[in-house]
Image (cartoon, rainbow, N blue to C red):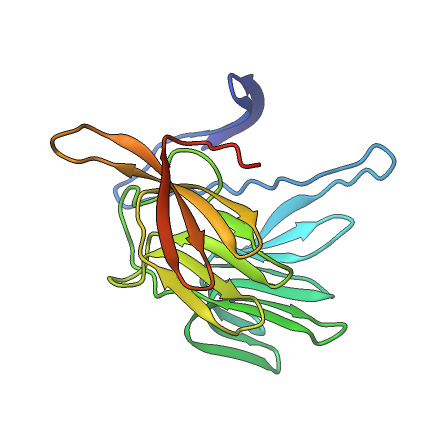
Length: 237
């Protein structure tokens, strides 16, 4: 099979094209691995992905970590994760269920996002709702951010691929503390407006009035949300 890749400038910015041609048999798969990184004029970097095993990629160059693209098995490593990055100074894992790395064993009853600083021993983690496979798109909106920081250790995001009862606006502490779920759907444009106050937009579609956007204010201390204006992209002062 022959292939090529190139970068083109499209309407919304740079677009990466990757193509692979050849004969495929029923059940065959082709997978692309793209590596995106920054490089300053005075400190050029030349990083290259190299396949180690299924879902396991070494990033060769001036900063050599190993990337996990899903569950993987290799010499000295067994990982049941959604994704991860292993380096000499830190371990960052998303959707961690079970990892055996040499003498180190990490397990979780429910999937967690975890970052471990190997130099200081500091651990940050966020418990995720149990995910389910979904074909196509589920929840979320068409614009704005669906994640954000509310403080140095508190993050907010919109969960849309969890089991029944686990979807909505989620607020969690990265130190593995409290986790709050507020069941709102078709959410767009999550913004921090003031301490303990967040705005977000939903798409409402009553049968008799047609569809429209509705912006809400959410008190993250009480979990109470109130609609404040019809429309989207508010300007807060």
